[in-house]
Amino acid sequence: MTEKIAVLGAGSWGSTLATVLVENGHDVKLYTNIQAQADELNEKHTNEHYMPGFKYPEKLYATTDLEEAVDGADAILFVVPTKVIRLVAGQLKDILAKTNARPLIIHASKGLEIGTHKRISEIIMEELTERYAKGIVVLSGPSHAEEVAKKDITLITAASNDIEEAEYVQDLFSNNYLRIYTNDDVIGVETGAAFKNVIAIGAGALHGLGYGDDAKAALMTRGLAEIARLGMAFGASPLTFIGLSGVGDLIVTCTSVHSRNWRCGNALGQGKSLDEVVRDMGMVIEGINTCEAAYQLSQQEHIDMPITTAIYNVLFKGADIKEEIADLMGRDSRSEIIGHAKDIRRK
Ligand SMILES: NC(=O)C1=CN([C@@H]2O[C@H](COP(=O)(O)OP(=O)(O)OC[C@H]3O[C@@H](n4cnc5c(N)ncnc54)[C@H](OP(=O)(O)O)[C@@H]3O)[C@@H](O)[C@H]2O)C=CC1
Ligand SMILES: O=C(CO)COP(=O)(O)O
Image (spheres, rainbow, N blue to C red):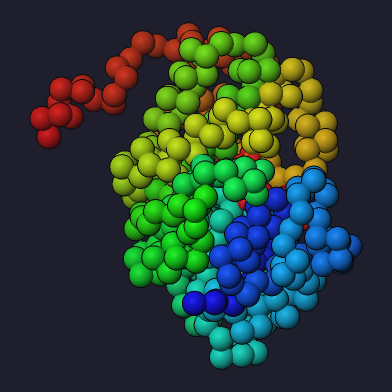
């Protein structure tokens, strides 16, 4: 069945997911806030700043008119950076308020809101309320736009409290190169997605400084322990963290040259300043803001997150990366599992 879908955000991921939907036979409108980008997408079928060299399907239509983009949409997909999610959700609410529409909301962004520490589905539903949104589904997992655009094999998760809505999204996006699983653990999927970006900055920094594979595996493993600790404190299932949106996304983001978070860390490790890195990237590096939110949450909830704290010190307090690594290595010895493994097995 052909569905009408509005995609909000024409960066690398939004334009790629819009392409998947067009290729799956849906009627897609892609919203951008920049007229020159809409013109480039409609006339040349390119998006050179975000996806250099990629040719988009001619059927993909871009517009800077949000009202036009969402008119009659069965589903609306948010793929804008976390810091503008509330703004765009508010703009959408004003438009939906003029109609009787109550579309399904999907989001594919990864982060936490600065200040409130809210997850993206919480922000969107706070703005739209059930009055204007039928429900919300999170689309997340190990996926780089550059690889999905080439139709490389990618597996991700559609998470919702309403499993039928997750299955609807599974059907919308599934094809022979993109396989979608469903999950009902929205908190686990969103926290895994947000926090892995912080650890990926650390993985990039290790690479930039010339550390080896053992160090990188250690960071990913102990980073996952921190992600799971914080996520579980908010009600996530531990099992979600060994799934696609947990360890899966952590692996891809901590090892791929496509990752903006990894590249940010790599450049910091090579001695560049954060300001330089942000300026040169020209795309969103979600892990920076999320690191601040994760650090504040760990303090507020009294959750031990030494790696996140070290990355926070480097990003926000100008700490030296090597000194932070030395401090991490000098911490008191402890058990790998909080509590004794044999006691946990008996429970
Ligand atoms: N890239 C990827 O492979 C993946 C990304 N994600 C997540 O998707 C989200 C978006 O990432 P990505 O596409 O890569 O980011 P990009 O930096 O590539 O693009 C972000 C886009 O959002 C646009 N934007 C910013 N503010 C607004 C606004 N107020 N209204 C409309 N559009 C706006 C930007 O426009 P402008 O040019 O004006 O800044 C830009 O086109 C992030 O949360 C990211 O973590 C998830 C999985 C994979
Ligand atoms: O979320 C992503 C991969 O799953 C994209 O990561 P980056 O934002 O670091 O590029």
